[in-house]
Image (cartoon, rainbow, N blue to C red; front, side, top):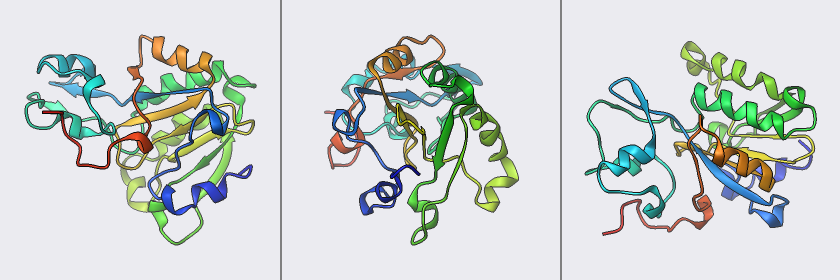
Length: 211
């Protein structure tokens, strides 16, 4: 896996390996929020929080469904997926990553699970084209879940120009890459991408809104 296996199998990467940032070769990073639905309609996290007078920028912890705890819980909500992007987010994310990849959709990538999915065994991984991501996501739906097939926590191109992490517990996908890639994600009208601290930078206390 291009030298990544020791990092992905390290003790502090059980839920997923998170790069450090510029020191690991990535100029910038952001989060892509997984889709949320209220009453069957897709809504933006920012709009739901605004109804309760909240801003995601004030949330100190990692990006999970705990953001929508007591006082910030709309009626009829379908919470964002945890541990993997939903299909709509993934499809658009792949399109943008392709624009910043050497061979576009045909770019060869590594895909690897998180250690938590098979503790004690080597991290499962495979190699494939970026364009295969959505088809693999579809293959992981329904009965496939009972067989242990899951969308990988990590994926990156062979040249390591970007790196994607979907932590097991979180409802957002972290993307590391060039300043141009991250600017593209943050400006995209179809994705809800935000700047937020890395997992390692979150406070160790239980997630909650500042009093």
